Image (tube, rainbow, N blue to C red):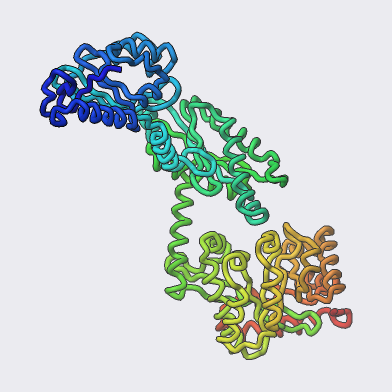
Length: 597
């Protein structure tokens, strides 16, 4: 290699060119200095190449050769830049698909310092800096920044993609949705499908989050395999996904995709040795020339999804304007509910429960009513589900417990009071603590309190239902299974926990005495209660005939409009007197045939 080297200002520092002032003119000192300079250049982390004004190599270090797979002969002094480019083309390490274009680009003259990145054919990324020299030559450095670029790409990907499934996240999805809406404004049609997995929470709760996460990845893969490359699927949060369907011709395109997704996502999954079954509900909103706002479209799809889930899950629904009206109504009810407790708008009504053996009132069920400032008296059917969905049911239940215990403490007769406990309270609250606090605050004898739960509570395997009920039972409080026989009935519930009472749902009473199926069910439940030593209460008794059947089939208690509709506390004494009169009249009417349990 030549001993001709240049310093930063372009001066030749070799013999014959003003070297007297360098190293004191001592040739050995100069040679030593040049040796160290050569070592320094060869130990640079960047590749370096110095060219003269004729584009010929003056100096080239070993790192430059290694970057491009070149030999010393390929970059010896005097080699032209074009020859180096052709050597790189020969070994396949260059940055253009067209070799001649690559050579033309690399050998262009330039006059100002600049830098650029170049993606090589082998996948590496090189940062190239070029700086002109005063004599027309230039110095260039080449640095492999592939790892840095990959790290930056990973960070950029993480910012826009879901870390678990690798799908676009909400940020990237909204960006693509905005782009699609621009095309919609130009006449295209698009659709947004909002997906929410059914029964996913039970998988997480039963098998743990690692299995749940693996299941979400399987779901993402199935969705991806069933959409076009032009469409976008994103994981928005938890078990919620969205599909942006572009270039939609008709609503049938959306229906076909929704049905396909429902079918494929409902097929069994084998995850970590577990056979899992879930489903999916879908809400669809279509964007066209009249509906092309991204936020409105997302909101519409979400409303359609809400409708789909409320109508049984495992299906799809299209957005309709009335859904928006219903949702606005629901949100208003939710807002009003939040203020109702503070404003003291709740009130308890009481319906008597009749002891058929003594033929007299033995207790009352506390039933919640809402005195809405503009709607008037609102029944639980119209707001309890919203209270449960929003978590407001917990403070409401605590209020009911406290108020019912306080009211019962002041009754003229020491009758029991029954209060319903929501399954939501068991999942997210501490019902045993709430019961204990209500009893302590009111001073009510625990034996006079009865708490009612429904069978649906036992479906959630993650809640330690039995332990909580045992805690309540130890206080001396009675426990009833409400609405028995509807939907989830299982005798294992009765044997797993010693209930004090079974309340037979009104749906089995309303058809009496003519309904043979209802009669058989009532008879079976009454017999089961007798065998297990439990009280059985027939709900919804409204006629003499229904009361007679309840008595004849062995029920121990009844409740219903036959004796009294739910009444406010101030009507308590009148209600008791009316019940006494009703019992006396019924007993006289049946005469000697009156055969109570």
